[in-house]
Length: 394
Image (cartoon, rainbow, N blue to C red; front, top):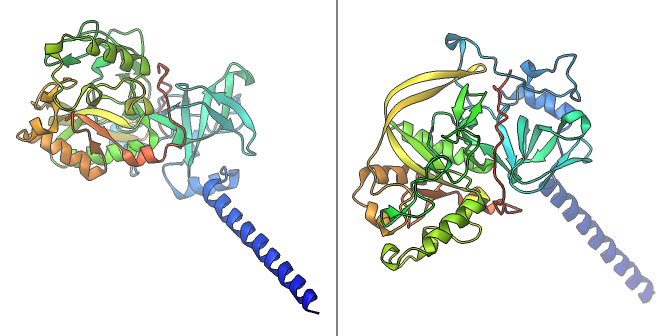
């Protein structure tokens, strides 16, 4: 009798353990492996939020895509009819250009792999739903078009597409201002280190904005934090002036190699060391969670229009900062910026938004929360050249 009771006890314990494992597994699965949105959930989301409203984006009958909304051009309303977008960014993500930061899969609604995107590959974002983007990408197969889903935590977004009020001036794309101890760095200072087009200024035509503009990619999770910093600046009549987001690995190494070979008297790094100013190997610019930004005073503002939305554009004067941006010496440190009010304001705007400053460079800010969410880190070994942006909500 005792052996029977023991057997039943063991059986009950075993069943309890199995049940507990199943409960933990289901809970884990629901939290980690979130489902790709179904067509029904897409419709509900589109009705609930303006950001994913694709009602004006329905493809025409002769569209060769698979029945998904595909923005196809710059169709703007009259300025007096345009509205200010109310969302987590200055403009919706729909129509913006995104980029794979690492090799990623494009999936259909049933989790089947439609294609693999190589690092740096550009695509047009059609819609956001939870942790997913529905994208439109050119392909050498499938009639030249693929529409599917990607996890946006592994993607970068072109900042001017979603925060166009920021002033962008990527000097490395036309004439680098890198200097060491305020002296020229051979083969770096004044050189075009990379470009987004054959243009001398390195800009690419952005149909969404109706003008030539720099491509400034950062990881998508960081874009919202940068926008908060810009809102903080705007409240005080200032604007961020971003000089660089993503920086190719090749450029990073090129600058490092030239700086390490400078004469001893030009290497004024103090107790910080060269790695505080220019890293060898992969850094946070290559991983996509860093920006280099200065600050400008707004002297005049107006509105521009894309799609049905309007956004601010400025005439400005850049503040005098502790030293020139991309100065690789102790002159760039936060300690040297203690008496500079514009630099202190910049730290305040960014810190209050959730960005952390690099102690050796008053202009360099990281988003550590975004860094913590990276599941596969980019090595930055690619050049970005595609701008596929179109108006939101066409």
